[in-house]
Each structure stands twice: as C-alpha cells, then as structure tokens.
Image (cartoon, rainbow over all chains, first blue to last red; front, side):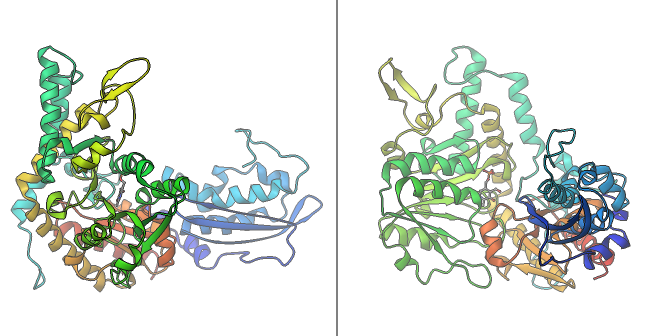
Length: 136
Length: 417
Ligand SMILES: Cc1ncc(COP(=O)(O)O)c(C=O)c1O
C-alpha cells in the first residue's frame, strides 16, 4: 500500500474521531466486528422523518477502519436512511482520498459503512436491497 | 554486532538464501523481499520445488497398487520420505509416522481416534493458556461430546507456562495437549517435565509441534511423547502435508480416523479388516507429491543440522529482541531471553494498530503478520485485540532485522509517535 494512504487527515480522524460516543436514547443502533482483525464499530442514529438528524459512533481497531467510520459520520448527517443504503466502497475510498486499497484492508475501510447500513435498515419498513440483494 | 551475540556467518546465510528462489524476487513496491512470516508458512528451497516437479514430470503414479515401474518408483519415494521423516523425529520405526494434511488434521486424528475410544464422562483434558486454535477447538468438541472437562496451565508475566500446580491439575486428567513452542509468544514449553508428570499421573500426551519441528531437534523417543503433530509447510515443505508421530502400541489400540481405500486389508459388503500401520490411518490417495517434497525438506534441514538451525535462530532472535527493546514505543510479549523462545516475536507499537504497522511495513517489502495469530483466547488474556508478529527461519539475516527496525521507524514517523 502507498504510504500516502496514511495521510495527515486520516491520522487526525483516527486520533480525534468526529461524532464519537453514544446517545442516551438513540433511535437506531447497530454494532459489529471483523473477527479476523478484531476491529469493532458501533453506530447510533437519531432519526427525524426518515432523515439522519444526528449520528454517533464508537469503536476500536486500525486507523483505516476508525478514520473511515469517523469521516462517514460527517457525510451522512442529513441524509435519508434510503440514501445511506446507496453508499458503497467508492464513497468510502473517496472519503479516505484513496484510489484503491488492498483486498486485505477493504474490509477495514468499509466496516463503518456496513454497520451504518445495518443500523439504517433497522429503521426502515422494508429493507432496501443493494445490487447483491443484501442490506449491507 | 553487539557483544554476547554469536554472529551468523554471512557466507552461510548467503549460501542458504541462494537456495530459495523467492528471496531473489521483489515486492510490488519494488523493494527486496524481507520475509518475516515463517511462523505462518516457510519459504521452500529449490530442492523441494524440484523434487515435487521431478515426481510429476518423471514418475507420477498412484502408490501401493501399481505393478509397473513408475508406480514402484512413486511408492518407494513416498515410503522413503516417511522413513526420512521418522529418522528426523528419531521415531523407532517408519510405521509410527502417519501422513496427514497438516498439524491440525494430526491433532484431530488424535481427538477422534484416541479421544472417542478412550475418554469418559468426568475425565479431564489439560491444555495450556497459550494454545493455537488448532489445539483448543478439537478438545472443546471432544469434551462436549464425551462430557469431559477442560483445564489449563497458567502463564507467568513473561508468557512462560507455570508448572507449580502441574501435579494437582493432572488429577483426573486422561489427556494432556500442549504446544511445544507458542506461535504467538515464542515460549518454548518445558514439555519434558509435562510429559513425565502426565505419565506418572496415567495420562496420555499429545504435543502440537507445528512451531517446534521446523526449528528444534525433536527426539520423540527421548521425550517419550505419545503423539507429536507437525505441519510440513512450516518446515520448508509444501502445503497439504503434515505428520503425526504416535507410539505403535497406541496406534494399534485405537480405531481408524477416516475410512475408505488404502486403509483396508479386506472388505466385504458386511465388514472390513483394517490395513497395517501406518496405512490404517491413511484413507484414500495421499498427497504423494507433498510427502515426497517433505522428504526433501527434511533432507535440507538435516544437511544444515538442527543444532545449527537453532543456534542461528537464537542469535537472530537475541539481536532482534535487543533492537526492538531499544526501539521507542515498541512493547514486546513473551519470554525476555532468546534461549527461552523460538524465533517468533509479537509486539505492539504505541497506538498504531498492528494492521497499520503491517501495511506500512508491506510498503517497505517487509512481510509480517498482524492479528490474533489464531490465539484469540491468549490475546484476550493479554488484553489485546491484535499484535504484530515477526518470525525468523534459516534464510533470515541480521540485515532482515535491520530492515524491520527501519520500517518500524518509518511507521513511527508516519504516525508521529
Ligand atoms: C502452534 C501451532 N499449532 C498449530 C498450527 C496449525 O497448523 P496448520 O494450519 O498447518 O494445521 C499452527 C499454525 O499456524 C501453529 O502455529
């Protein structure tokens, strides 16, 4: 992997993650881990009329997974739950400012998105399948 | 070079490195390959690669049945490899070496064939806290099935197995299963003492030698061990082949593991008589090329001499421990002295996650492992989700250790530690 990948702003998000913590009463929440490397992320949402009014996340793991989740929380504020389900790998890479990422690390980069989508699906009348027909 | 560390002769190292074609390649980043993940799998010398292609190109045939020339040659090569493996472990006879797929399958063979026939409800199985998943999960399944209990020998602050309460813990134990060398902490487990105490208590002992057989002289008769498992791919051999040593009397007393062709003597529609040892435990067509390749690997190790292999590793490990101890922000796990450990060093560095360390090192051509190394319960006890791990073998040099340190310094710079 290109060392440029560990850019300054990625390390900033890793050390000082945005929207970190928990709500007292979240409307939606989901938590999952990547058992291969032990990365773990929890996402909580406040929802207002189908839109994400506010978001918190908590987690531990590598810089890529944690920074990626932190950036994602900035991006999804104000989105509808449906809109979050259309986010994909490319959006994650764009947030990170990376053109590509090794197969071994893509799971780290997309863990936050996966958890966010699971949380969002929990607040929807019906799951919104993506191309693979899955909710994540 | 630091005082007190035996230098590895550079000419010896260069000669060995020339035998491993992969070490001349470059990584995607254009850097020379610095391979520090031999605990996961070792690289293969040309002699092993050529032995395998020699079989496929020159005398590929199934074994133990053909009457034609190449079938006889294949059978001779396969059984010759078994004899060399037997001599490598100093087994009393070739029939005490069973070819399996890997150490994991060897341990499962013991769990199923010995365990189902011998364990009873209320019996106990004694393990240590540093085991690989391969030497935990089969016993969990067996214990659940038979109503047996699992017990563990604890570790001290340096990750060494505590033997103070060994005799007390052995009460009611029918089977002891322990690693010889830990793949995470590097700890060399004092199996001589464990085996002797277990036998006094009437227990049978299976040793997971996956990380020991490649690096230490293992003498199964001197150890008086009952079962000893190893993986070919970690000892210069190909993937797909492993070995189980077992005492003849035990192998004769227990039922087969898998059933099918090759393991039978006579089959009627109603019943079967099993083949002699070792074939009773080798159902179906074996990994013939793999076994022959493992024979060549064992030859290579014996040409080097296991005493040299160990001395080389102690020297490299001592040097690496010294340099890592001096590196800022690096925290090491496992025994402090190189003499008490194999060539495996797990570490963490500041708040850099091991996966990030491994990714940055990858950019420098340095291959290390990051994660829990199939020892999740041990990592949980250490209070860690993951560690980074560097491991050495016969082809590694002081220069490889220096490359590791330099790459770690770069990681520290990137993360502004
Ligand atoms: C201590 C130990 N035991 C068992 C194994 C399992 O080896 P294999 O996957 O070849 O069966 C390993 C390999 O990582 C190991 O390090």
